[in-house]
Image 1 (cartoon, rainbow, N blue to C red):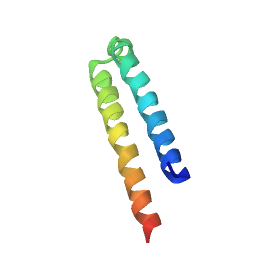
Image 2: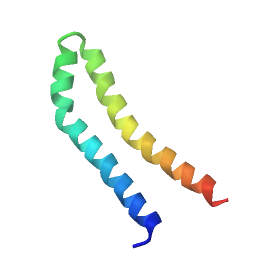
Image 3: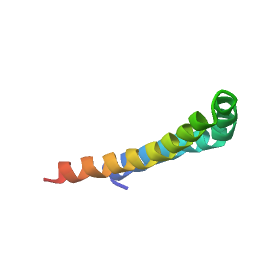
Image 4: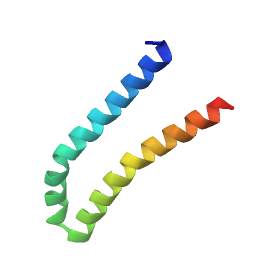
Length: 68
């Protein structure tokens, strides 16, 4: 395994771990926020999912720019 592949694998593992822990606690967070506002709880869920895709979109864009 090359050093570049190893660092990419470590980065992906860290991201998946962070989002995995976030997904585990998301229902509790949504319930807590939902006590204040149900709309805010929905926004929290949407932002969580959007952040997941945004991170990988930015990573792909960064890698594409570095190739040139």
